Structures are given as C-alpha cells and as structure tokens.
Length: 109
Image (cartoon, rainbow, N blue to C red; front, side):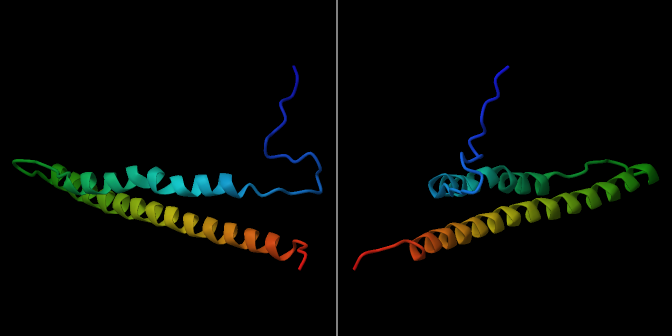
C-alpha cells in the first residue's frame, strides 16, 4: 500500500514553510469553534434540582449537584478563555513570522 505524504512535511527537511494564510483561516474560525462553550453556560446555569420534599439523601444529591455545576461552569469559562489565548498567540506568531520574513528579504533600493 503506497504511503500518502503528509501536507505538513516539507520536501526538504531543512526547510520550513509557514502557511500564514492557512493559520489565519484557522485563527478566524476559533470564535465559531468556541460558540458551543458560550451557549452551554446559560443553559447550565438555568438547570435546577427540583424536589418537593427533601430527605437527607436528596439533600446530599442537591449539594453534590451544586458543586458539580460550579466546577463545570468554571471549566467552561477556562476553556473559553483558552480559546481567546490561543487566538492571541496565533496572531502574535503570524505577525512575528511575517515581520521576520520581511526583515530577512533582500530588497533593492
């Protein structure tokens, strides 16, 4: 069975090509990718534990649910913040690569 070459592997192992257009496209899609996280927070907060008559067992379950809810909300917020940090990091990398390529180019005056 023939091996399909990876699009990420350059022909020359000593050469690296930065596909800035591809990275910009991925970066531009990050907010859309994080949308489910943003949509989950209001839905999660609106959930409640309903019980007519609390027993010691259902009371402990209600307490556990509140702790799980608080943990999950915190995790979702962290993941949304991670998406923003990744996007900022990609922006910085793209700018640095572009500036480095410009600085290392030979130009005639």
